[in-house]
Image (cartoon, rainbow, N blue to C red; front, side, top):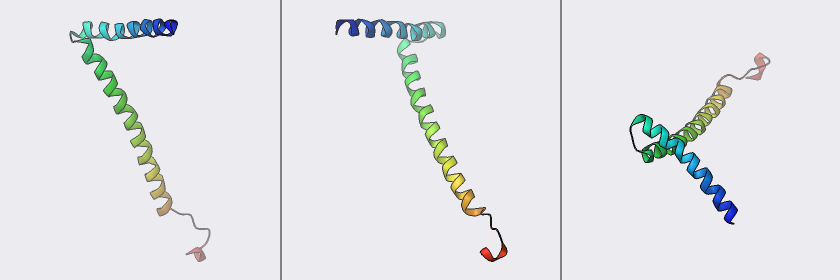
Length: 75
């Protein structure tokens, strides 16, 4: 368990150091950068799902409107 905890602590320090360097470069706090990354992640995942639903709806409507008929008697 101690090895797992040390590995987790190592990756947290290195990962947060990236946010710290970005924050230092921009002149803001690191907490703001971390929260911004989290919100951006939620927004992009939600946008992808919404885009998927929009295309599924659009294709269904297109299929209902534009149906190919093989002959005149298929009405």
